[in-house]
Structure formats: C-alpha cells, structure tokens
Amino acid sequence: MPAVTRATITLLLATLFVATGCVTAPWVPTDGAYTSPVDRYAIDLPQGWMRWTQGEDGRLVVTRDGVLLQVIMIERFRVGEPLKHTKKQLARGMMPQEAAEVVLDNFSSNKDISGLEVKDNRPTTISGKPGFWTVFTYKTKDELKLKVVYCGVLDGEWFYGIRYSAAQRHYFDKDLKTFETVLRSFKLKTNA
Image (cartoon, rainbow, N blue to C red):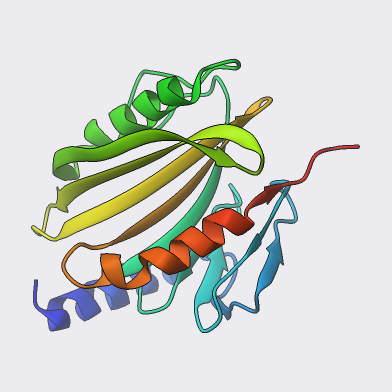
C-alpha cells in the first residue's frame, strides 16, 4: 500500500474517531514509567514514543512512527467473558498454552485478516507468573504483512495481553528489542 494511501486512511480514521467521540484521551509523549490507573499494572515505556489510552477498556496503545508501522499494546480481559472473534473463552486455572490457543483462535477467526501463520509458541514468565510468548504473521485486507509477538498472563479473574505488532519487512526487527525491554518491565500490581 503506498504511503499516501496509509496517510489518508490514518487521517480519515482519526477524523472519524474524533467526530464520533471515540477518542477519550489525546496522544501524549511517553516519559518512561507508566502505571495504569485502572488495570493494576506498571510498565516502563520507551522514550520518544507516543501513548494513548482507550477510555472504556483501558487499553494502552504505544507507537513511535504510527500504529500502521509498529505498535505496542497492553490489554486486559475479564476471564470468562467472550472475546471479539471466537467462541472460545479464557478460564481461571487455564495453563498458559491453553490461553495462547484461545488468543490465537481469536486472531485467526478475525475476518479482517488472512493467512495467519504461527511461527513460535512457548512458555515464558511475565511479572513472575507463568505466561506465554507466541509469534505469528498475517496479512491485512490491504495485503500488508504484519508480524506479531503476543504475550499473555492470567492473574485471577483477569487476562493481560502484551502485544507488539509491526510491518514485517522493516519495522518488526527494528523495534523487537524495544518491545522485549518493555515486556520485562511489566509488573502486575496485586491488592494487598
């Protein structure tokens, strides 16, 4: 997709979000440490990037060059509630690899993407808890090939997803180490 088209789409989407009231907070520069006021986690964000928090669900979106090129996203889902594209659900006590299967099914069931290929799927530790690290690729409707690292961890009644998605050709490798640093800094805040 030519850059002009991407810029036009981005401008149209931004205008649509503002016009319909979907934007609840402006993009702001990241300044290192960030603590979610609602979702009970803290994380160190990369300097020189911009962040935006989606009001109704607290999803954190971070990018340096624009969400079509690279994005780090933190999202939280209540265990047992339906996900957008799959009938499968996350459940308390699930093993990390079972949770990974639910997340991957949610992506592969999304009609806006095609050709999902899992490249890696393994256990990892996130904030001292057992989690998963999965890498996959897919194509958008505009034939842009994206590569994604999606890491997830269950914490009681909540599932936390930490995602890095970027255009596979240039941006993915360029910012992967930055994502790994962000992921290592992710800390769940437990109620005392």
